[in-house]
Image 1: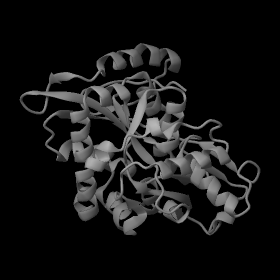
Image 2 (image 1 turned 30 degrees about the horizontal axis):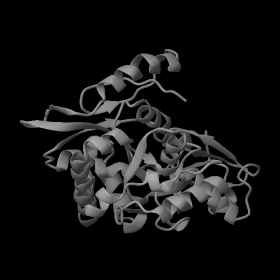
Image 3 (image 1 turned 90 degrees about the horizontal axis):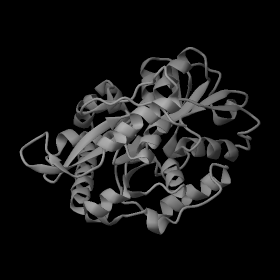
Length: 339
């Protein structure tokens, strides 16, 4: 579903428009796409020329690697973070060519690729990192208590949809009949829980930790306990970027990998340095990174066929997709392997 977009310089925040969404995307999205073509441009960060790449992300801890844009001293690539508020928005932007790459949920990336969007996966964004959060009462204390409730997910084409359905079916609960599953943008979920619009949600952090801090919700289950060490968000780059600027892509991926090591070794410092990118209180991010330490992991980020094959199997099992993607042509692990 096309979503309206508005552009600012450097970090770009997407806002909803009162005009018709399809018309707004046509008017503004095409302008974005025209401005997004990568190439040698005057570097705005230092002297000289660099390949300037717009990389989309959401303000979630799954995309904490984006702090590399501030931490790393890139020589051949200029990274411009582009912030979105929902998965449909970021997927539409990548599809339209308005951005050069994006951290996308694995099922969304697979779906775009299956539909012919020229993207490749070059790096995993993280492992684990999501939660089932429910209202802070004694009403829901186990997965079985979700029967008859309204639970929000960020997108039908999300790892969270798969995780929720996996948890439910393993407890012999029919996701289509025994509860109501609705779509909702991640930033809206905490308020929706607090105001009683939903009974719970499954989404990436920090929205579980945020609900805990505000005393409006409690974490029912960590995603690592539903599907241990699962993949979720992955870095998709447009094929023309990979083909035309392999050295810049290598430096980008290597910078993200160094940042992953920094986060793992220095979670408190990483949390303090996340404010500009994520817009959350550092103590919330610190909780996600430390309670427990494997609640969100930035280890083992090389894309591999087994992880994506498992994701595709679950997508088929739970009716998320009918067709599969040729993983050999979609995954490009050479940059992550080189580090």
